[in-house]
Length: 172
Image (tube, rainbow, N blue to C red; front, side, top):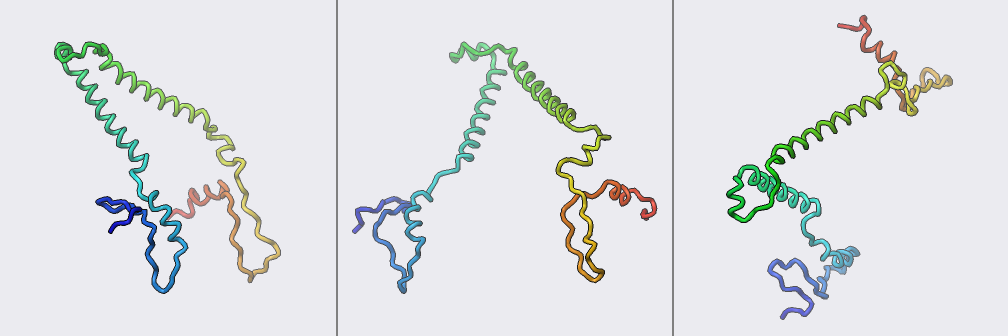
């Protein structure tokens, strides 16, 4: 006989039965109360981002099909099926052209802003800023046999980099 508190579903996902299974040897799981209360919330549908992606992809396909029908189907056929109000065919070419020009101008504007915000190559701001750290000096009280500690994080001097990269005596 079924209990009055159980849900009879083909998948048997949810069960609101008040009877709990007894653990052998009197083992009590403190998470069992919490998991039984959350069991209904664990059964969820798809994530909202998946739904938005699905709806967005379907809407894009539908809008593309409508655009292509409007662009290629003759006016007489559209009017014969009852569509009398639609934009001028001028917008078939003008709308994508305006969109592409807007995107290209936005990209050019973005690149221009980055060039304006970048300091000149001869500026010392390209080498040092408020977060630059000079390498610390080794403790003069250390003896020769002592282990050297790890140096704190610091910037490497540009002259040292140039010496390592461009010194002609180290070239193979």
